[in-house]
Length: 637
Ligand code: 13P
Image (tube, rainbow, N blue to C red; front, side, top):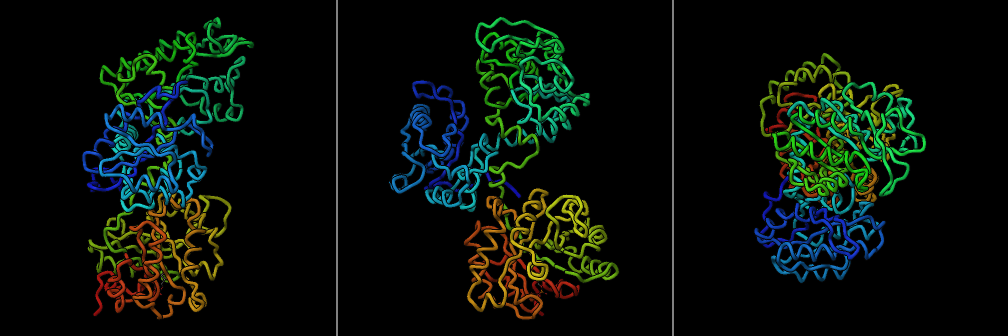
């Protein structure tokens, strides 16, 4: 799976839908108060214009809860963008609908159109596929530069990408991903992370993941009071998330964690309120903790000066109030000073960036990430829907999969796989997948592990581990080296009564585990007779893929008409081509679709010659080494 970038698109004379994160603050005169996010996307905007494209820009601003709210209009952003680019930016009063369609149709090459706030429609947050389709219909190409929104599975960042063959990343998206990936994979050590902000709940995943990566983790801001409480300290009126006390208690055993040793406290959370510095264990009952104390500031400065990488997310106190700002200002200054000495510093999160700007230090760190939530989720190792939707399953070679079903005991498996290794082990221009029964997976996996052959499983459970007698977990399959797993084979649907709902759950866990699912769909003889093929397939697709529509491209489809399986009755190439064309019309154009059902050396070449067939899923004929080898090589003699 790869990500395309805007540089790989042919843009000339094309309309480009560009999703950006123009969620900028507006002042009380409805003017842009800080245009950082607009400027961060300028390289992508200018590149598209220089290459002769026409721009249709989409973004959200604030959280209007699916309703039109003039206070969250993007009109001020259109004005600011006009000033920055020194050329006219047109503004559409909505982001979908007949009027917008007309405006889009009237665009000339090189025009720039900014659409109104996508979140004025509830469909945006629901990732509604029709809404996404309408947005997509305006343009020939789609580029996503909205890293800050990529942790949201919303229509304009996730669903929309499915309607383009080559959805691509903009330069900002690439920059953000590459920097974070580098920090995750090859951090310069010592590696320090400073986390602040109000809530443990939003950062708990990040804390767990970062503890595995960093050499030291400082927890400041409102979060530290939950930890003090877990230690048994009096925290006065400070923030505490009771639901996280147990977790905090466990984390406290980790020697990498540093908690502030002293705290600034105040009786009231307002400007001008008197403050005093107390030891962390001595917070008065009638006071709030509002910032880190002096000794802590010194400790942090010392820690910062001794490291090579810093990731900072979240202020140290209520920095917006002048009396409570010293701790955050001090950390910002220390991080900026360390950066001038060659430390790699990555700062993320809206509040932290606002703090940096307040102290005039925004340009003095290595990278200011435009994403707060997105950065944290990326660091947690979570998949971000906006980024996942840009990954492409590029079908580079025909896929030939051999499903051995409940055949081949251990000795037979050994014989078959060794034969296959000799016959097709060096074939480079096919993706060959061997799918033995569970009992042979371990052995077959070992034999093929250094070859070109890939390993797949015939089924798996939708839970990772537990009391499910007789079931097999995808986690175990991964451990055995499986890369693929068949889900929803018709024999499971019809003999074992497996439902679309169960199949959906299995697909979700497969995606989660990074297993490539081969989703089988197809109609029975009776359904074919009643001319229900397309209806059945539509149902299997929509119910099977519910909630994971934006990741369809990471699944392989296999059309297996039930009436053709093991019966010797192959569907004619024309029949197969028609159904494959229909399936493709429901999915992104480059999703791999295999055909299965009495595939043999005698018919594989005609089948593979059809436009929408990207490979075959072979049952009976995969049990004989010579016939499978002939299928792999498309040999009919
Ligand atoms: P046959 O090739 O035996 O018809 O089986 C097809 C199949 O079900 C593969 O999964």
